[in-house]
Image 1: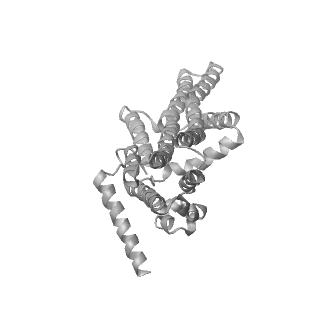
Image 2 (image 1 turned 30 degrees about the vertical axis):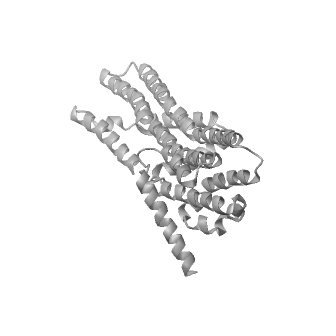
Image 3 (image 1 turned 90 degrees about the horizontal axis):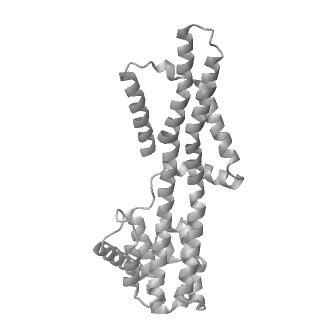
Length: 294
């Protein structure tokens, strides 16, 4: 929604200012300039990316128009889920988690957080490293190195669509100049026409430069920044899990481990210590009541 609102502000400001100085809107309507700039931009995008990158970029575009799912409640659910898993491991032994991590969809703990259970990447990240911890053959430093490598790989892959959009946006001003130069060439080739007609041809040619710059900095390049912000939220979830699990491996109790995880969250969504404590306590009481009813 903010993207659409931003586009409206960009168009309204540019065209409104142009109108206020007495400019004619019809002079900006140049379909051939749009064809040259847009077609060249799409062509360069195809040339500069492999099939896998193009596919990922196209799949990522719909994400731009969705709100963020990583709210404070989502992070509270993540930390409470980890607290319950680590508490179970501390009380019953790490082998007690085997059924939970082998089949999260059938786990009572995971099923308590349907939003997290629907996030395959997060569920796999948690269960994969809990499985390695249960194996008992790797120490905390080895697990941390492995986590860092996976997070680094995810960051590199997720930045691909943003890089593709950024490169496409950066090329549009140059294609605008190409369109403008071609328009000027056409105008010079018509030097025998009256001055008024030549002026109109040159004005049309200059629209190409205007459109290239506007499309780049007003429409395409900002999308790359939004994509990076959205994927950074995914990375932050992984970092929260990493810090929490490593803290547990270093011997800290679940209450302290999830507090370490809370500290790495963005301040805009990070719950306070008391909020996390209350949320965990409420979830524990709901769990106890359900068990008693059963």
